[in-house]
Each structure stands twice: as C-alpha cells, then as structure tokens.
Amino acid sequence: MPSPQPAVPFRHAVVTGGAGFLGSHLCERLLAAGTRVTCMDDLSTSDGSNIAHLRGDPAFAFVRHDVSTPFTTSDDVDLVLHLASPASPADYLRLPVETLRVGSAGTGHALEAARRTGARMVLASTSETYGDPQVHPQPESYWGHVNPVGPRGVYDEAKRFGEALTTAYRSAYGVDTAIVRIFNTYGPRMRRDDGRAIPTFIAQALTGQPMTVAGDGSQTRSVCFVDDTVRGILAVAGSDLPGPFNVGLPEERSVLDIARAVAAVVGVPPDVEFVGRPVDDPSVRCPDITAIRTRLGWEPQVGLAEGLARAVAWFRETAPAGAHSGDG
Ligand code: NAD
Image (tube, rainbow, N blue to C red; front, side, top):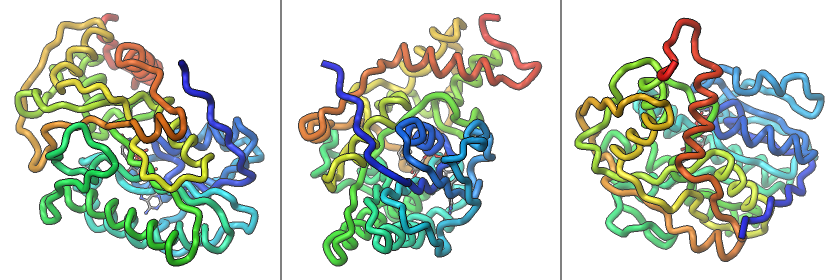
C-alpha cells in the first residue's frame, strides 16, 4: 500500500540550509502545500542555483546567514527545519570546525528560534550517528560506533551533540522537537563534484571516465531517492512525535553494485577504477524503518533503477556545455 502524502499543516517554515540539495526540495514541497518559507543559508556548500526558481514566489524569502551565529525570525514561524550543515565528506573534511559549530551553536540557535515562537523544530540528523555500526540493520535504539577523533568525527559528533541538545530543549523547555536520522539520499540537485558516490559515478559515467569505487566496493549502502526522503521528513514534521526516526531505503547494496547500476542506466560499460578507502568508512549501512513505517505509515516508493533514471536525466539536462552524455 503506498504511504499517504503527509499533511503539512504549517503557516510559515524556516528552513536552515534550504539552498542545499535536500533543503531546496523541502522548500519547494512546503511552498506547494501553501506554507510560507524563509530559507536561511550561508551558501557555504551550495551556490543558490537550487532555489533560483523559487525566488519570484511571494511566499518565499531567502536570507543569507550563517546560522552558527544568532538569528531572529518573524513571530508567526511554526516550523523550523534545521538542515544547515556541510553534508558531503568532502565538504565537512574541508570545513571541520564550521561543521562542529553549525551542529552545536547552529542547532542551539534553531532551537532558540523554535522556543521563542513556539514552533515545531525538526533536526536533520544522519545515519552517521551510527558510525561504523556493529548492529545491522540499524534501529533507532542502537547507540552507534563512532570514532570521535577520526576525520569523520567532526560530522558524526556534531550531529550526535545536536540530537542531545534537541532532546534537552524538549525536556527542559518543552520545545516541540523531532529528530530524523537521514540515510544516504540521492537525486536531482546534487552537486556533481560533491564527492558523494552517486553523483560522482553519474558524472564520471556521463563523461566517459571510469567510476572511482572506494576499496574493493564490497562495503554496503542503502540509498534513498530524494522525493521519498523529503516525504519522510515532512511526515515526521507533520506529526507530534519526537523520534528519532530513521528515514531511508532498507535495501542494502554494495558500492560496486551501485556503480554498475549507474552504468546500466547511463548506458555505458561498467568501467570501474578502485581507489583508496577513506579512514573510518562504514562497512555496512542499512536502516531499520519499522518505527516510521508503523507510527507514520511512511515507506520509500522509488526503487534504485527508477531513482537513478530520474537522477541521470537531471544530470543530463544540466550537463555543462561540451560534456559527453554517455550513450550519446
Ligand atoms: P547540502 O550541502 O546540499 O546542503 C546543506 C546546506 O546547508 C547548504 O546549502 C549550505 O550552504 C548550508 N549551510 C552549511 N552550513 C551553514 C551554516 N553555518 N549556516 C547556514 N547554512 C549553512 O547537503 P544536503 O545533502 O542537502 O544535506 C542537508 C542536511 O541533511 C544536512 O544537515 C545533512 O547532514 C543532512 N543529511 C543529508 C543526507 C544526504 O544523503 N543528503 C544524509 C544524512 C543527513
């Protein structure tokens, strides 16, 4: 049974990180549901192109601001979606201190905004809170296996602190909070150079380069199409439940299989180059989505082949002039 479209009963949402990949899709969905949207973003890992088409909408406002410093919102805000954070390993390794700041101080400012206005506040957390997991698949009750002093620690621990702070604002101040632990998501509007596996594979396959697979490619990921992830986040936002809720596609694939699937969709031979595996790269990753499925009726609807076809179509449409297009 397809899961229902979530009700989005909000008047005015602030979306931090709203110019990014997930944030721009969320802004669009909220506007389509009749919600006013203030997108607050410092454009540190995006360039504004994802929201260019929203700029003319009178219900949409863009505020360029680093949310690691305090901000004010209008009094009528009833939803704060806190997505601001570098998200790709390439970005958070380049911006380690900024990543910790936005996960700590930035989350604090988003919570303060919700506390002042009485808004619901949803923290975009991550499957990275599970680190290199020793429990598989990962239910929300699993505490994780994170190396705080490894290179990925800046992201994982920032999100873990953000979850603790969100939980404390709920218990200490009665703020209406929720936490979503988002698993790897892909789709239109990812930067081709953001370093994450799927946009990298697509960009490489479309330009006739070998796809660079980390290690031997046997490590697994579960990858969810953006429309499903956005629907999951909005389902949690539209409920009164605190979570945390895993949001992801509970189908595990090896990274090598994902590369092969990209090649099949692009229509090129699966030409792969094996490269070094990043430090602390998780070996397995797959969500247990029992909680969100049973409590909110959400589950992903887009499988890998369909999602990749939609992502590849977008990468083709937006290809820089002069780039090859794989199967021509
Ligand atoms: P993204 O890099 O495309 O978007 C992040 C946005 O946040 C960018 O527009 C960036 O400019 C903005 N930003 C960063 N620091 C900021 C700051 N200090 N102040 C204001 N804006 C700031 O990444 P994304 O994939 O859209 O991820 C969005 C959120 O979802 C992140 O919090 C990420 O941790 C979380 N998440 C994403 C995934 C995924 O697969 N895409 C998985 C798990 C969690």
